[in-house]
Length: 459
Image (cartoon, rainbow, N blue to C red; front, side):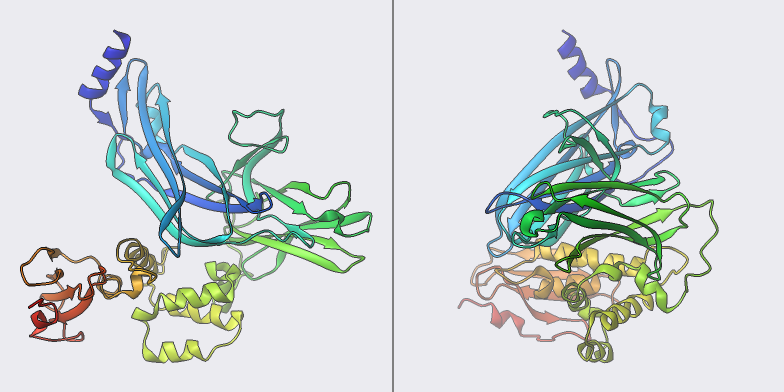
């Protein structure tokens, strides 16, 4: 009877949301790579979200909400699923007044994967309202951690690290410690101590009795504001490297955490970095940080490789002028490309009073959507005709699909009612492999062919 009563409550009692709010479900996400076995990498995926944004239903003792989280790895070259994990997470509260303030929940998934290029999909859904959902997808080039030379794992930034006895039921247990991740990488007034976790490898490749470790924090102009230095004996081939740095005195802004392992005898070193943010509203702004050129180093471009910079500009080419395309093509070196990308998006930022560049944010959301929905064979979705139109003009107001017309190959008609007084784009699957090519458009700057039907006629 107790179970039946519980199910009855779930069915008939309305769900409740946070009092006075309509906050969307939003996740934070981070990843870190560690040694696995001889053929695989161990990859951890960290995620977090505000549980107060879920919908809760009355149950026998209080209220309950549920979140469904899934992580999927697809091999980029074949689009086949390589690994998938999903979890349903229940949350219980006694009183809905507890939802008036945000309550962050952080968790972790672990995967053993072969080195490859993957498409990663992370989805969080409200278990009671499928419309409340957030998803992130990205391409990840997973490489083995160096097995022949002094090396480090990726940096994991954490909310806490405490010693504990081995506990296989604790999802945060790792190497005699409870390591709780901070996937938002946000610290400051609410989280005044930055904890970090890494692993060092191949320590016995050198005969030196000790090795040195240096942790540092640099601000947005590259000035070092904190650092620690220590020496450790080479007792084992691998070791756990943990520590903490107090960031309560740092002013609001972007920072870079850097961790370096050094062998002074053989003159080798290995460094890994992680960008993070500090929010300390009680402290005045840093007047030493320039509001001009140095802002590049406080942006996301500060730690991007040249390959990542080239990829981002390539995905921005639909909104770039010919002059901007030619200018970027002439650049060499990461610094020049960082500056070019920073300037490119800064001048398109329509509201500089906010920290977020809404125009850029919307652009890359469209790129992400196109990659998921319009990918064809080995061609990224944003490079297809439908993907290009979606990225440039956004989602159409109407889509008229014709997939089973007599004597005609499949085609689609996209309508935009507010663009140039109303325009259409017509795409046809001429090859039969779901690669819809733009056949005709009434947009004055696009391909125009009044006889487009002949291109898809099967007669």
